Image (tube, rainbow, N blue to C red; front, top):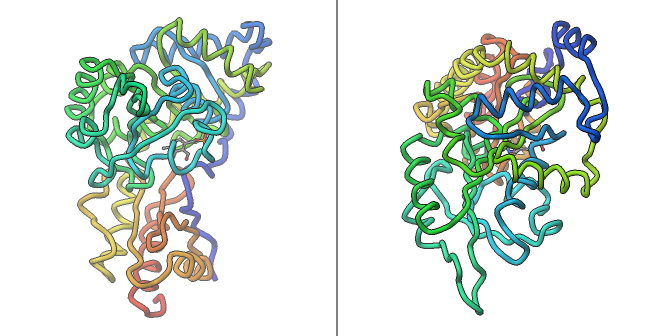
Length: 348
Ligand SMILES: Cc1ncc(COP(=O)(O)O)c(C=O)c1O
Protein backbone atom coordinates (compact mmCIF):
# COMPACT_ATOMS: atom_id res chain seq x y z
CA UNK A 1 0.00 0.00 0.00
CA UNK A 2 1.31 3.47 -0.94
CA UNK A 3 0.94 6.63 1.12
CA UNK A 4 -2.65 7.29 2.16
CA UNK A 5 -4.59 9.89 0.18
CA UNK A 6 -7.09 11.03 2.78
CA UNK A 7 -10.36 12.15 1.18
CA UNK A 8 -12.62 11.41 4.16
CA UNK A 9 -13.37 15.07 4.82
CA UNK A 10 -12.11 18.62 4.40
CA UNK A 11 -12.08 18.87 8.21
CA UNK A 12 -8.83 16.90 8.44
CA UNK A 13 -6.59 19.72 7.20
CA UNK A 14 -3.77 20.88 9.45
CA UNK A 15 -2.87 24.52 10.18
CA UNK A 16 -0.11 25.88 7.96
CA UNK A 17 3.05 27.55 9.33
CA UNK A 18 1.66 30.99 8.36
CA UNK A 19 -1.59 30.23 10.15
CA UNK A 20 0.27 29.15 13.28
CA UNK A 21 2.27 32.40 13.13
CA UNK A 22 -0.97 34.40 12.92
CA UNK A 23 -2.29 32.51 15.96
CA UNK A 24 0.88 33.16 17.94
CA UNK A 25 0.78 36.89 17.17
CA UNK A 26 -2.92 37.42 18.08
CA UNK A 27 -3.90 39.90 20.80
CA UNK A 28 -6.26 38.11 23.14
CA UNK A 29 -8.55 38.71 26.12
CA UNK A 30 -11.43 37.03 27.94
CA UNK A 31 -14.33 36.58 25.50
CA UNK A 32 -16.89 35.85 28.24
CA UNK A 33 -16.18 39.45 29.34
CA UNK A 34 -16.32 40.50 25.65
CA UNK A 35 -12.65 41.51 25.85
CA UNK A 36 -10.90 39.52 23.12
CA UNK A 37 -9.92 42.16 20.53
CA UNK A 38 -9.02 39.68 17.78
CA UNK A 39 -12.28 37.81 18.20
CA UNK A 40 -14.41 40.97 18.43
CA UNK A 41 -12.85 42.36 15.25
CA UNK A 42 -13.32 39.07 13.42
CA UNK A 43 -17.00 38.79 14.41
CA UNK A 44 -17.59 42.32 13.08
CA UNK A 45 -15.65 41.62 9.88
CA UNK A 46 -17.59 38.46 9.00
CA UNK A 47 -20.94 40.03 9.95
CA UNK A 48 -20.19 42.91 7.58
CA UNK A 49 -19.04 40.53 4.84
CA UNK A 50 -22.25 38.51 5.07
CA UNK A 51 -24.69 41.41 5.45
CA UNK A 52 -25.76 40.79 9.06
CA UNK A 53 -25.62 43.00 12.14
CA UNK A 54 -23.57 40.69 14.34
CA UNK A 55 -21.67 37.41 14.57
CA UNK A 56 -20.94 34.85 17.27
CA UNK A 57 -17.75 32.79 16.94
CA UNK A 58 -18.23 29.22 18.18
CA UNK A 59 -16.17 26.03 18.30
CA UNK A 60 -18.30 24.05 15.82
CA UNK A 61 -20.80 24.27 13.01
CA UNK A 62 -23.02 21.93 14.98
CA UNK A 63 -23.22 24.56 17.73
CA UNK A 64 -23.88 27.47 15.35
CA UNK A 65 -26.63 25.39 13.69
CA UNK A 66 -28.05 24.48 17.11
CA UNK A 67 -28.15 28.14 18.17
CA UNK A 68 -29.39 29.40 14.78
CA UNK A 69 -32.36 27.01 14.74
CA UNK A 70 -33.02 27.68 18.46
CA UNK A 71 -33.38 31.40 17.70
CA UNK A 72 -36.17 30.64 15.22
CA UNK A 73 -37.99 27.62 16.67
CA UNK A 74 -39.49 27.27 20.16
CA UNK A 75 -39.72 23.94 22.03
CA UNK A 76 -42.50 21.83 20.55
CA UNK A 77 -42.35 23.56 17.16
CA UNK A 78 -40.74 22.20 14.01
CA UNK A 79 -38.10 23.12 11.45
CA UNK A 80 -38.35 21.79 7.88
CA UNK A 81 -35.16 20.59 6.19
CA UNK A 82 -33.96 18.34 3.38
CA UNK A 83 -33.87 14.62 4.25
CA UNK A 84 -30.05 14.37 4.08
CA UNK A 85 -29.43 17.66 5.91
CA UNK A 86 -26.57 17.74 8.41
CA UNK A 87 -28.93 19.10 11.10
CA UNK A 88 -31.13 16.02 10.66
CA UNK A 89 -28.50 13.32 10.16
CA UNK A 90 -25.29 14.32 11.83
CA UNK A 91 -25.89 16.50 14.88
CA UNK A 92 -26.77 13.61 17.16
CA UNK A 93 -30.39 14.69 17.49
CA UNK A 94 -29.28 17.82 19.36
CA UNK A 95 -32.11 20.05 18.10
CA UNK A 96 -34.65 17.66 19.65
CA UNK A 97 -32.58 16.38 22.57
CA UNK A 98 -31.45 19.80 23.81
CA UNK A 99 -34.01 22.29 22.51
CA UNK A 100 -37.22 20.28 22.00
CA UNK A 101 -37.34 21.06 18.26
CA UNK A 102 -38.94 18.54 15.90
CA UNK A 103 -38.21 18.15 12.19
CA UNK A 104 -39.96 17.12 9.00
CA UNK A 105 -38.09 16.72 5.76
CA UNK A 106 -38.44 17.01 2.02
CA UNK A 107 -36.29 15.06 -0.45
CA UNK A 108 -34.87 17.35 -3.11
CA UNK A 109 -32.99 16.18 -6.21
CA UNK A 110 -29.33 16.28 -5.12
CA UNK A 111 -30.44 17.91 -1.87
CA UNK A 112 -31.86 20.98 -3.53
CA UNK A 113 -34.56 23.34 -2.36
CA UNK A 114 -37.98 22.16 -3.54
CA UNK A 115 -40.34 25.04 -2.86
CA UNK A 116 -43.48 23.13 -3.82
CA UNK A 117 -42.60 20.35 -1.35
CA UNK A 118 -41.72 22.86 1.37
CA UNK A 119 -44.95 24.78 0.85
CA UNK A 120 -46.90 21.52 1.07
CA UNK A 121 -45.23 20.65 4.41
CA UNK A 122 -45.33 24.12 5.99
CA UNK A 123 -47.95 24.52 8.70
CA UNK A 124 -47.41 27.81 10.50
CA UNK A 125 -49.93 28.23 13.33
CA UNK A 126 -51.18 24.66 12.91
CA UNK A 127 -53.65 24.93 15.77
CA UNK A 128 -54.20 22.64 18.76
CA UNK A 129 -53.69 19.23 17.09
CA UNK A 130 -50.65 19.52 14.82
CA UNK A 131 -47.10 20.72 15.31
CA UNK A 132 -46.62 24.27 14.07
CA UNK A 133 -43.81 24.97 11.62
CA UNK A 134 -41.58 27.83 12.73
CA UNK A 135 -38.67 27.75 10.28
CA UNK A 136 -37.04 26.21 7.22
CA UNK A 137 -33.35 25.25 7.19
CA UNK A 138 -31.30 24.89 4.00
CA UNK A 139 -27.76 23.62 3.49
CA UNK A 140 -25.41 25.37 1.05
CA UNK A 141 -23.43 23.56 -0.17
CA UNK A 142 -25.26 20.34 0.65
CA UNK A 143 -22.77 17.89 2.09
CA UNK A 144 -24.34 14.41 1.93
CA UNK A 145 -26.07 15.18 -1.37
CA UNK A 146 -22.62 15.67 -2.97
CA UNK A 147 -21.53 19.28 -2.47
CA UNK A 148 -24.61 20.65 -4.22
CA UNK A 149 -24.92 24.41 -4.61
CA UNK A 150 -28.34 25.95 -3.95
CA UNK A 151 -29.12 28.44 -6.71
CA UNK A 152 -29.44 32.05 -5.59
CA UNK A 153 -32.80 32.25 -7.37
CA UNK A 154 -34.15 29.30 -5.37
CA UNK A 155 -32.82 30.74 -2.10
CA UNK A 156 -34.41 34.13 -2.81
CA UNK A 157 -37.71 32.56 -3.79
CA UNK A 158 -37.73 30.47 -0.61
CA UNK A 159 -36.84 33.52 1.50
CA UNK A 160 -39.80 35.37 -0.03
CA UNK A 161 -42.10 32.46 0.75
CA UNK A 162 -40.86 32.28 4.36
CA UNK A 163 -41.40 36.02 4.80
CA UNK A 164 -44.91 35.82 3.34
CA UNK A 165 -46.08 32.99 5.60
CA UNK A 166 -44.16 34.06 8.71
CA UNK A 167 -41.46 31.35 8.87
CA UNK A 168 -37.82 31.88 9.85
CA UNK A 169 -35.06 30.83 7.43
CA UNK A 170 -31.78 29.31 8.65
CA UNK A 171 -28.88 28.54 6.32
CA UNK A 172 -26.27 25.94 7.23
CA UNK A 173 -23.47 27.50 5.20
CA UNK A 174 -20.66 25.28 6.50
CA UNK A 175 -19.33 25.43 2.92
CA UNK A 176 -20.94 28.68 1.76
CA UNK A 177 -17.47 29.75 0.61
CA UNK A 178 -17.41 26.83 -1.84
CA UNK A 179 -20.87 27.73 -3.17
CA UNK A 180 -19.72 31.26 -3.79
CA UNK A 181 -16.44 30.32 -5.48
CA UNK A 182 -18.29 27.80 -7.69
CA UNK A 183 -21.00 30.24 -8.82
CA UNK A 184 -19.42 33.68 -8.56
CA UNK A 185 -22.43 34.72 -6.45
CA UNK A 186 -21.10 36.62 -3.40
CA UNK A 187 -21.62 34.90 -0.03
CA UNK A 188 -23.48 37.98 1.11
CA UNK A 189 -26.21 37.53 -1.52
CA UNK A 190 -27.03 34.10 -0.09
CA UNK A 191 -26.67 35.14 3.54
CA UNK A 192 -28.51 38.44 3.69
CA UNK A 193 -31.89 36.90 2.79
CA UNK A 194 -31.69 34.40 5.68
CA UNK A 195 -32.57 35.20 9.31
CA UNK A 196 -29.74 33.12 10.76
CA UNK A 197 -26.63 31.82 9.01
CA UNK A 198 -23.92 29.39 10.10
CA UNK A 199 -20.53 29.39 8.36
CA UNK A 200 -17.47 27.24 9.09
CA UNK A 201 -13.78 28.09 8.84
CA UNK A 202 -12.66 24.57 9.73
CA UNK A 203 -13.79 22.84 6.49
CA UNK A 204 -12.25 23.75 3.13
CA UNK A 205 -10.76 26.98 4.45
CA UNK A 206 -8.47 24.90 6.65
CA UNK A 207 -8.70 26.50 10.12
CA UNK A 208 -8.24 24.04 12.97
CA UNK A 209 -11.42 25.15 14.79
CA UNK A 210 -14.21 27.67 14.33
CA UNK A 211 -17.63 28.51 12.97
CA UNK A 212 -19.75 31.65 13.17
CA UNK A 213 -23.44 32.38 13.60
CA UNK A 214 -24.69 35.54 11.89
CA UNK A 215 -27.97 37.33 12.58
CA UNK A 216 -29.43 40.54 14.02
CA UNK A 217 -27.67 42.12 17.01
CA UNK A 218 -30.62 41.17 19.21
CA UNK A 219 -30.56 37.52 18.10
CA UNK A 220 -26.80 37.25 18.55
CA UNK A 221 -27.05 38.68 22.08
CA UNK A 222 -29.59 35.95 22.90
CA UNK A 223 -27.44 33.27 21.26
CA UNK A 224 -24.42 34.43 23.30
CA UNK A 225 -26.34 33.74 26.51
CA UNK A 226 -27.54 30.35 25.25
CA UNK A 227 -24.01 29.41 24.17
CA UNK A 228 -22.80 30.10 27.71
CA UNK A 229 -25.73 28.14 29.13
CA UNK A 230 -24.63 25.16 27.03
CA UNK A 231 -21.07 25.47 28.32
CA UNK A 232 -19.74 27.10 25.17
CA UNK A 233 -18.49 30.39 26.61
CA UNK A 234 -14.78 30.59 25.96
CA UNK A 235 -11.93 32.77 27.05
CA UNK A 236 -8.83 33.74 24.99
CA UNK A 237 -10.34 32.34 21.80
CA UNK A 238 -8.66 35.06 19.74
CA UNK A 239 -5.92 32.56 18.92
CA UNK A 240 -8.59 30.53 17.11
CA UNK A 241 -10.22 33.59 15.54
CA UNK A 242 -6.77 34.53 14.20
CA UNK A 243 -6.50 31.13 12.52
CA UNK A 244 -10.00 31.45 11.07
CA UNK A 245 -9.28 34.97 9.85
CA UNK A 246 -6.06 33.78 8.19
CA UNK A 247 -8.00 30.93 6.55
CA UNK A 248 -10.65 33.30 5.22
CA UNK A 249 -8.10 35.79 3.87
CA UNK A 250 -5.65 33.31 2.36
CA UNK A 251 -7.46 30.06 1.55
CA UNK A 252 -10.80 31.17 0.11
CA UNK A 253 -9.86 31.69 -3.52
CA UNK A 254 -7.92 28.44 -3.72
CA UNK A 255 -11.16 26.48 -3.15
CA UNK A 256 -11.46 26.51 -6.97
CA UNK A 257 -8.48 24.11 -6.99
CA UNK A 258 -10.37 21.71 -4.70
CA UNK A 259 -13.35 21.85 -7.08
CA UNK A 260 -11.11 20.99 -10.06
CA UNK A 261 -9.58 18.13 -8.08
CA UNK A 262 -13.01 16.76 -7.15
CA UNK A 263 -13.95 16.74 -10.84
CA UNK A 264 -10.68 14.95 -11.69
CA UNK A 265 -11.46 12.31 -9.02
CA UNK A 266 -15.02 11.87 -10.39
CA UNK A 267 -13.81 11.63 -14.01
CA UNK A 268 -11.35 8.91 -13.05
CA UNK A 269 -14.06 6.94 -11.23
CA UNK A 270 -16.44 7.37 -14.18
CA UNK A 271 -13.81 6.25 -16.70
CA UNK A 272 -13.90 2.81 -15.10
CA UNK A 273 -17.50 2.86 -13.95
CA UNK A 274 -19.73 5.49 -15.61
CA UNK A 275 -22.88 4.61 -13.63
CA UNK A 276 -21.19 5.23 -10.28
CA UNK A 277 -20.94 9.00 -10.43
CA UNK A 278 -22.62 11.94 -12.14
CA UNK A 279 -19.53 13.88 -13.26
CA UNK A 280 -21.53 16.82 -14.59
CA UNK A 281 -23.17 17.16 -11.17
CA UNK A 282 -19.86 17.66 -9.34
CA UNK A 283 -20.05 21.36 -8.50
CA UNK A 284 -17.69 21.80 -5.56
CA UNK A 285 -15.30 19.71 -3.44
CA UNK A 286 -17.53 16.73 -2.57
CA UNK A 287 -18.15 13.64 -4.71
CA UNK A 288 -20.70 11.00 -3.74
CA UNK A 289 -20.13 7.67 -5.51
CA UNK A 290 -22.78 4.93 -5.81
CA UNK A 291 -21.31 1.53 -4.97
CA UNK A 292 -23.93 -0.49 -6.90
CA UNK A 293 -24.41 -3.92 -5.35
CA UNK A 294 -21.35 -3.52 -3.09
CA UNK A 295 -21.96 -2.45 0.52
CA UNK A 296 -20.35 0.93 1.17
CA UNK A 297 -18.32 -0.43 4.11
CA UNK A 298 -16.70 -3.04 1.87
CA UNK A 299 -15.65 -0.41 -0.70
CA UNK A 300 -14.32 1.89 2.05
CA UNK A 301 -12.24 -0.98 3.49
CA UNK A 302 -10.88 -2.05 0.12
CA UNK A 303 -10.00 1.54 -0.80
CA UNK A 304 -8.18 1.93 2.54
CA UNK A 305 -6.18 -1.22 1.81
CA UNK A 306 -5.11 0.38 -1.49
CA UNK A 307 -4.11 3.69 0.14
CA UNK A 308 -7.28 5.77 -0.34
CA UNK A 309 -9.32 6.92 2.66
CA UNK A 310 -12.98 7.74 1.88
CA UNK A 311 -16.13 7.52 3.99
CA UNK A 312 -19.43 5.69 3.74
CA UNK A 313 -22.43 8.04 3.69
CA UNK A 314 -25.20 5.54 2.94
CA UNK A 315 -25.67 1.77 2.64
CA UNK A 316 -24.57 1.91 -1.02
CA UNK A 317 -22.75 5.23 -1.30
CA UNK A 318 -19.33 6.57 -0.40
CA UNK A 319 -17.99 10.12 -0.30
CA UNK A 320 -14.69 11.72 -1.27
CA UNK A 321 -13.89 15.29 -0.23
CA UNK A 322 -10.99 17.27 -1.67
CA UNK A 323 -9.08 19.85 0.37
CA UNK A 324 -5.86 21.80 0.63
CA UNK A 325 -3.89 18.78 1.85
CA UNK A 326 -4.17 16.76 -1.38
CA UNK A 327 -2.82 17.35 -4.89
CA UNK A 328 -4.49 17.01 -8.29
CA UNK A 329 -2.42 13.91 -9.06
CA UNK A 330 -3.37 12.27 -5.77
CA UNK A 331 -7.06 12.94 -6.44
CA UNK A 332 -6.89 11.53 -9.98
CA UNK A 333 -5.02 8.45 -8.74
CA UNK A 334 -7.50 7.98 -5.89
CA UNK A 335 -10.34 8.14 -8.45
CA UNK A 336 -8.65 5.46 -10.58
CA UNK A 337 -8.33 3.22 -7.53
CA UNK A 338 -11.96 3.65 -6.46
CA UNK A 339 -13.06 3.14 -10.10
CA UNK A 340 -11.02 -0.09 -10.31
CA UNK A 341 -12.52 -1.37 -7.06
CA UNK A 342 -16.06 -0.77 -8.32
CA UNK A 343 -15.22 -2.43 -11.64
CA UNK A 344 -13.92 -5.43 -9.69
CA UNK A 345 -10.36 -5.32 -10.98
CA UNK A 346 -6.97 -4.71 -9.38
CA UNK A 347 -5.54 -1.16 -9.54
CA UNK A 348 -2.88 -0.63 -12.15
C1 LIG B 1 -23.02 20.83 6.12
C2 LIG B 1 -22.43 20.75 7.48
N1 LIG B 1 -22.99 21.45 8.47
C3 LIG B 1 -22.49 21.44 9.72
C4 LIG B 1 -21.38 20.70 10.02
C5 LIG B 1 -20.91 20.66 11.45
O1 LIG B 1 -19.67 21.17 11.64
P1 LIG B 1 -18.80 20.73 12.93
O2 LIG B 1 -18.15 19.45 12.57
O3 LIG B 1 -17.86 21.87 13.10
O4 LIG B 1 -19.75 20.58 14.07
C6 LIG B 1 -20.75 19.93 9.02
C7 LIG B 1 -19.56 19.13 9.33
O5 LIG B 1 -18.96 18.49 8.51
C8 LIG B 1 -21.30 19.96 7.72
O6 LIG B 1 -20.76 19.25 6.72
